[in-house]
Image (tube, rainbow, N blue to C red; front, side, top):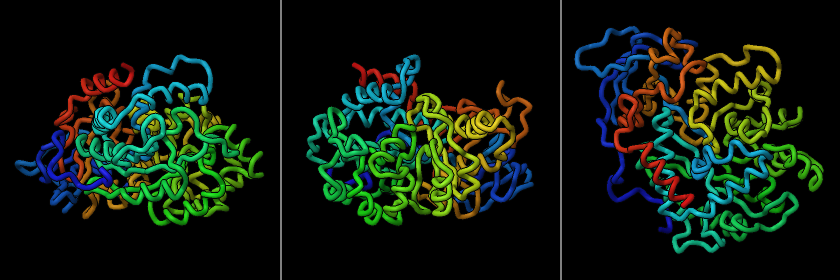
Length: 457
């Protein structure tokens, strides 16, 4: 296919759960409240919240949601194919750079059909974890030798279809990736399938992408390693106004190479080229100077933190509190999918800050909830999602408060106690996707097993 369009009919795997209806949450996290409210009656119509009323006894015939109900979670940074690496790299010595070689092995095996199967299973795992929208940082564009497919966006189309079949929304962050190093060395080996010929070729392919009802199209520049200086300003100009994401200062080596090549930090370089701004999101932002923090905050550039990946790859601990205090909205991502659990990502923001500062208590539960919900959706271009409020998209995620992890935990403590395994029910745009802890249309474990074995076969 040459464009991503709405499927002619419902995807074969699309959840068919009841649409809309009335729900009564034992507790629900409502906007403007520092703690969840009790006895919340929620009415959904046409995929939107029609009424939200706290302190209401459950009426007859309403669907009960025992536990604490949250807005839909947004996974603002994903590389779906990295899910195939889980458990295969964690015992190795080395750094991000040695891990990357193993990642390239996985990247070399995928074709559109394999990618659809792996991404569908990965996104269904996200749904089980309460994730209702994913930002897919997509650079696996072409065939392994770099030759474009006959349908130039067939790999991106596979991701959009995978999200539809898993029952979640997606923002496809189609990624510009032109060079292998900051000083402009050409792409080598499997990297060639990531790259378009130049910015114009990337733009021509990107312009063929079309959103579907469950999908939006954004853009990304992989990093200052992968996009030459000569293309940065034009890229920023061509993609202004929509979601624009980029890896930033994930490793110290990136900063050192940028200083050597350009005489400034990656943040300063992107600021000078007009990349920063309120619709832009810096992913990782781990190794920042004080001036970098000021540039990101003053431009209201968001920061997407991925703590479970950053610790798995030994990247370091980013300055989360300083970023928030400077004015950068924080969102969360599972990135390489060493873990798919936004509860773990959220509490790691707080707990890693404690390790950095040797002090406790940096983020309130409400701040962590906001990062995992509304801020993530906004970073992905879905400003009408991530909150349980009249008119917003009807996404709900219910977490049990009676498991071995959450028993006797107060409702406001969910992000410090619960895991993805405690999610029982998920609605996306008013449609049931997860019921009683099970995906309504995907056998997630079985499909993960099949699709990952196919990657390594």
